[in-house]
Amino acid sequence: MQAIFKNIKGSLGRIRGLVLRYLFLIKGSVPRLLELAYWPSIQLVLWGFISQFFLTQSSILAEAAGILIGAVLLWDVLFRGQLGFSISFLEELWSRNLGHIFVTPLRPCEFILALMGISLIRVFIGMSPAIILAIPLYHFSIFDLGFPLLAFFTNLLIFGWVIGLLVTSLLLRFGVGAESLAWALIFLIAPVSAIYYPVSILPNWLQWIAWMLPPAHVFEGMRAILVQDYFEKTLLFSASTLNLGYLIIATMVFLYNFNAARREGRLLQIGE
Image (cartoon, rainbow, N blue to C red; front, side, top):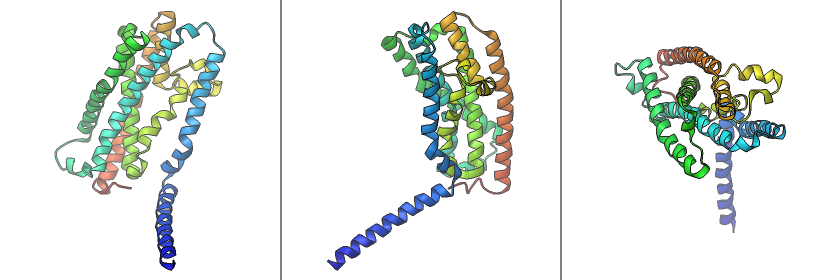
Protein backbone atom coordinates (compact mmCIF):
# COMPACT_ATOMS: atom_id res chain seq x y z
CA MET A 1 0.00 0.00 0.00
CA GLN A 2 2.83 2.35 0.82
CA ALA A 3 4.36 1.69 -2.62
CA ILE A 4 1.03 2.56 -4.31
CA PHE A 5 0.78 5.88 -2.49
CA LYS A 6 4.39 6.58 -3.39
CA ASN A 7 3.70 5.95 -7.09
CA ILE A 8 0.61 8.14 -6.98
CA LYS A 9 2.56 10.91 -5.28
CA GLY A 10 5.30 10.67 -7.89
CA SER A 11 2.75 10.73 -10.71
CA LEU A 12 1.02 13.79 -9.28
CA GLY A 13 4.40 15.50 -8.88
CA ARG A 14 5.24 14.95 -12.55
CA ILE A 15 1.81 16.21 -13.60
CA ARG A 16 2.26 19.25 -11.38
CA GLY A 17 5.68 19.87 -12.95
CA LEU A 18 4.24 19.83 -16.47
CA VAL A 19 1.37 22.10 -15.48
CA LEU A 20 3.82 24.55 -13.94
CA ARG A 21 5.96 24.42 -17.10
CA TYR A 22 3.00 25.42 -19.26
CA LEU A 23 1.93 28.09 -16.79
CA PHE A 24 5.44 29.56 -16.81
CA LEU A 25 5.41 29.54 -20.64
CA ILE A 26 2.17 31.52 -20.60
CA LYS A 27 3.41 33.84 -17.87
CA GLY A 28 6.63 34.52 -19.74
CA SER A 29 4.97 35.19 -23.09
CA VAL A 30 2.63 38.12 -23.60
CA PRO A 31 1.26 36.73 -26.93
CA ARG A 32 0.29 33.44 -25.23
CA LEU A 33 -1.36 35.31 -22.38
CA LEU A 34 -3.39 37.53 -24.68
CA GLU A 35 -4.45 34.56 -26.79
CA LEU A 36 -6.45 33.10 -23.91
CA ALA A 37 -8.98 35.96 -24.04
CA TYR A 38 -8.46 36.86 -27.68
CA TRP A 39 -10.70 34.44 -29.60
CA PRO A 40 -13.86 34.71 -27.47
CA SER A 41 -13.67 38.51 -27.51
CA ILE A 42 -13.11 38.76 -31.27
CA GLN A 43 -15.94 36.31 -32.04
CA LEU A 44 -18.32 38.20 -29.75
CA VAL A 45 -17.52 41.57 -31.34
CA LEU A 46 -17.62 40.26 -34.92
CA TRP A 47 -20.91 38.38 -34.75
CA GLY A 48 -22.44 41.07 -32.55
CA PHE A 49 -22.02 43.60 -35.36
CA ILE A 50 -23.43 41.08 -37.86
CA SER A 51 -26.52 40.61 -35.67
CA GLN A 52 -27.01 44.37 -35.37
CA PHE A 53 -26.77 44.74 -39.12
CA PHE A 54 -29.47 42.16 -39.88
CA LEU A 55 -31.72 43.52 -37.14
CA THR A 56 -31.73 46.90 -38.86
CA GLN A 57 -32.16 45.60 -42.40
CA SER A 58 -35.03 43.87 -44.17
CA SER A 59 -34.79 44.61 -47.91
CA ILE A 60 -31.29 43.22 -48.13
CA LEU A 61 -32.18 39.84 -46.60
CA ALA A 62 -33.09 38.37 -49.97
CA GLU A 63 -29.58 39.12 -51.21
CA ALA A 64 -27.87 38.25 -47.93
CA ALA A 65 -26.83 34.73 -48.95
CA GLY A 66 -24.86 35.89 -51.99
CA ILE A 67 -23.29 38.75 -50.04
CA LEU A 68 -22.20 36.48 -47.18
CA ILE A 69 -20.80 33.80 -49.49
CA GLY A 70 -18.90 36.41 -51.49
CA ALA A 71 -17.58 37.91 -48.27
CA VAL A 72 -16.48 34.52 -46.97
CA LEU A 73 -14.61 33.72 -50.18
CA LEU A 74 -12.86 37.09 -50.38
CA TRP A 75 -12.00 37.05 -46.69
CA ASP A 76 -10.39 33.66 -47.23
CA VAL A 77 -8.13 35.23 -49.86
CA LEU A 78 -6.86 37.68 -47.25
CA PHE A 79 -6.57 35.06 -44.53
CA ARG A 80 -4.84 32.43 -46.68
CA GLY A 81 -2.55 35.01 -48.25
CA GLN A 82 -1.32 36.08 -44.83
CA LEU A 83 -1.17 32.55 -43.47
CA GLY A 84 0.70 31.23 -46.51
CA PHE A 85 3.33 33.94 -46.05
CA SER A 86 3.68 33.45 -42.29
CA ILE A 87 3.61 29.64 -42.25
CA SER A 88 6.32 29.43 -44.91
CA PHE A 89 8.50 31.62 -42.70
CA LEU A 90 7.64 29.55 -39.64
CA GLU A 91 8.75 26.41 -41.46
CA GLU A 92 12.25 27.87 -41.55
CA LEU A 93 12.12 28.64 -37.83
CA TRP A 94 10.76 25.24 -36.85
CA SER A 95 13.53 23.51 -38.78
CA ARG A 96 16.11 26.08 -37.59
CA ASN A 97 17.04 26.62 -41.22
CA LEU A 98 16.77 30.40 -41.39
CA GLY A 99 20.42 31.05 -40.72
CA HIS A 100 21.48 28.37 -43.18
CA ILE A 101 19.62 29.79 -46.16
CA PHE A 102 21.15 33.20 -45.54
CA VAL A 103 24.65 31.73 -45.69
CA THR A 104 23.91 31.69 -49.43
CA PRO A 105 23.88 34.93 -51.44
CA LEU A 106 20.11 35.17 -50.89
CA ARG A 107 19.04 38.74 -50.14
CA PRO A 108 16.25 39.63 -47.69
CA CYS A 109 14.14 41.25 -50.44
CA GLU A 110 14.47 38.08 -52.52
CA PHE A 111 13.33 36.09 -49.52
CA ILE A 112 10.27 38.33 -49.17
CA LEU A 113 9.39 37.88 -52.84
CA ALA A 114 9.76 34.12 -52.50
CA LEU A 115 7.36 34.12 -49.53
CA MET A 116 4.89 36.18 -51.57
CA GLY A 117 5.16 33.72 -54.44
CA ILE A 118 4.47 30.66 -52.31
CA SER A 119 1.64 32.55 -50.60
CA LEU A 120 0.00 33.19 -53.98
CA ILE A 121 0.30 29.52 -54.90
CA ARG A 122 -1.20 28.43 -51.59
CA VAL A 123 -4.12 30.81 -52.05
CA PHE A 124 -4.93 29.37 -55.48
CA ILE A 125 -4.67 25.81 -54.20
CA GLY A 126 -6.78 26.52 -51.13
CA MET A 127 -9.43 28.73 -52.74
CA SER A 128 -10.13 26.80 -55.94
CA PRO A 129 -12.22 24.00 -54.37
CA ALA A 130 -14.30 26.48 -52.31
CA ILE A 131 -14.99 28.69 -55.33
CA ILE A 132 -16.04 25.70 -57.43
CA LEU A 133 -18.23 24.18 -54.69
CA ALA A 134 -20.08 27.47 -54.16
CA ILE A 135 -21.51 27.26 -57.69
CA PRO A 136 -23.53 23.98 -57.42
CA LEU A 137 -24.19 24.17 -53.67
CA TYR A 138 -25.30 27.80 -53.33
CA HIS A 139 -25.75 28.88 -56.98
CA PHE A 140 -23.22 31.63 -56.38
CA SER A 141 -20.25 32.32 -58.62
CA ILE A 142 -17.61 34.77 -57.44
CA PHE A 143 -16.76 35.26 -61.11
CA ASP A 144 -20.03 37.18 -61.50
CA LEU A 145 -18.14 40.13 -60.02
CA GLY A 146 -16.30 40.36 -63.36
CA PHE A 147 -13.17 42.48 -63.74
CA PRO A 148 -13.42 44.02 -60.24
CA LEU A 149 -12.83 40.51 -58.85
CA LEU A 150 -9.20 40.71 -60.00
CA ALA A 151 -8.80 44.11 -58.31
CA PHE A 152 -10.41 42.86 -55.09
CA PHE A 153 -8.32 39.69 -55.13
CA THR A 154 -5.07 41.59 -55.65
CA ASN A 155 -5.74 44.14 -52.90
CA LEU A 156 -6.72 41.52 -50.34
CA LEU A 157 -3.70 39.39 -51.21
CA ILE A 158 -1.33 42.35 -50.87
CA PHE A 159 -2.78 43.30 -47.51
CA GLY A 160 -2.40 39.68 -46.45
CA TRP A 161 1.31 40.03 -47.28
CA VAL A 162 1.43 43.22 -45.22
CA ILE A 163 0.11 41.34 -42.19
CA GLY A 164 2.48 38.48 -42.99
CA LEU A 165 5.45 40.83 -42.99
CA LEU A 166 4.43 42.23 -39.62
CA VAL A 167 3.99 38.72 -38.20
CA THR A 168 7.42 37.61 -39.44
CA SER A 169 8.93 40.79 -37.99
CA LEU A 170 7.48 39.88 -34.59
CA LEU A 171 8.79 36.34 -34.97
CA LEU A 172 12.26 37.69 -35.67
CA ARG A 173 11.99 39.85 -32.57
CA PHE A 174 10.35 37.42 -30.10
CA GLY A 175 11.02 33.98 -31.63
CA VAL A 176 8.56 31.14 -32.16
CA GLY A 177 6.96 31.93 -28.81
CA ALA A 178 4.93 34.46 -30.81
CA GLU A 179 3.90 31.97 -33.51
CA SER A 180 0.25 32.12 -32.44
CA LEU A 181 0.19 35.61 -33.97
CA ALA A 182 0.40 33.95 -37.40
CA TRP A 183 -3.20 32.84 -36.86
CA ALA A 184 -4.43 35.51 -34.46
CA LEU A 185 -3.21 38.86 -35.80
CA ILE A 186 -5.32 38.81 -38.95
CA PHE A 187 -8.52 38.48 -36.88
CA LEU A 188 -7.69 41.62 -34.94
CA ILE A 189 -8.79 43.65 -37.96
CA ALA A 190 -11.79 41.44 -38.81
CA PRO A 191 -14.41 43.43 -36.84
CA VAL A 192 -13.40 46.70 -38.55
CA SER A 193 -12.88 45.24 -42.03
CA ALA A 194 -16.62 45.35 -42.84
CA ILE A 195 -16.55 41.78 -44.12
CA TYR A 196 -20.19 40.83 -43.49
CA TYR A 197 -21.71 44.24 -42.78
CA PRO A 198 -21.18 47.81 -44.01
CA VAL A 199 -18.87 50.26 -42.28
CA SER A 200 -21.89 52.34 -41.29
CA ILE A 201 -22.98 49.66 -38.78
CA LEU A 202 -19.86 50.33 -36.71
CA PRO A 203 -19.76 52.94 -33.96
CA ASN A 204 -18.58 56.33 -35.19
CA TRP A 205 -15.26 56.07 -33.39
CA LEU A 206 -14.51 52.77 -35.17
CA GLN A 207 -15.54 53.89 -38.65
CA TRP A 208 -12.47 56.06 -39.19
CA ILE A 209 -10.28 53.08 -38.26
CA ALA A 210 -12.15 50.90 -40.75
CA TRP A 211 -11.61 53.40 -43.58
CA MET A 212 -7.87 53.30 -42.88
CA LEU A 213 -7.80 49.59 -43.76
CA PRO A 214 -7.87 48.37 -47.39
CA PRO A 215 -10.20 45.40 -46.68
CA ALA A 216 -13.04 47.74 -45.66
CA HIS A 217 -12.87 49.44 -49.07
CA VAL A 218 -12.76 46.08 -50.84
CA PHE A 219 -15.78 44.59 -49.06
CA GLU A 220 -17.79 47.79 -49.46
CA GLY A 221 -16.96 47.63 -53.17
CA MET A 222 -18.09 44.00 -53.35
CA ARG A 223 -21.46 44.83 -51.78
CA ALA A 224 -21.92 47.78 -54.15
CA ILE A 225 -21.59 45.41 -57.10
CA LEU A 226 -23.83 42.66 -55.69
CA VAL A 227 -26.55 44.98 -54.35
CA GLN A 228 -26.44 48.03 -56.63
CA ASP A 229 -24.65 46.51 -59.64
CA TYR A 230 -22.21 49.43 -59.50
CA PHE A 231 -18.41 49.41 -59.33
CA GLU A 232 -17.06 52.08 -56.95
CA LYS A 233 -13.73 53.02 -58.54
CA THR A 234 -12.93 55.41 -55.68
CA LEU A 235 -13.02 52.50 -53.24
CA LEU A 236 -10.56 50.56 -55.38
CA PHE A 237 -8.25 53.57 -55.63
CA SER A 238 -8.34 54.11 -51.87
CA ALA A 239 -7.61 50.44 -51.15
CA SER A 240 -4.71 50.38 -53.62
CA THR A 241 -3.18 53.58 -52.23
CA LEU A 242 -3.41 52.35 -48.64
CA ASN A 243 -1.95 48.99 -49.62
CA LEU A 244 1.04 50.62 -51.28
CA GLY A 245 1.80 52.67 -48.19
CA TYR A 246 1.33 49.76 -45.79
CA LEU A 247 3.45 47.44 -47.94
CA ILE A 248 6.36 49.89 -47.91
CA ILE A 249 6.10 50.37 -44.13
CA ALA A 250 5.79 46.62 -43.43
CA THR A 251 8.78 45.85 -45.65
CA MET A 252 10.88 48.44 -43.81
CA VAL A 253 9.82 46.99 -40.44
CA PHE A 254 10.76 43.49 -41.60
CA LEU A 255 14.16 44.57 -42.94
CA TYR A 256 14.90 46.46 -39.72
CA ASN A 257 14.12 43.43 -37.54
CA PHE A 258 15.94 41.08 -39.91
CA ASN A 259 19.10 43.18 -39.86
CA ALA A 260 18.89 43.48 -36.07
CA ALA A 261 18.56 39.69 -35.74
CA ARG A 262 21.53 39.17 -38.06
CA ARG A 263 23.71 41.65 -36.17
CA GLU A 264 22.88 40.06 -32.84
CA GLY A 265 23.39 36.51 -34.15
CA ARG A 266 19.76 35.48 -33.55
CA LEU A 267 19.14 33.97 -36.98
CA LEU A 268 20.63 30.67 -35.82
CA GLN A 269 19.15 30.83 -32.34
CA ILE A 270 15.52 31.86 -32.78
CA GLY A 271 13.42 29.63 -30.54
CA GLU A 272 11.05 29.72 -27.62
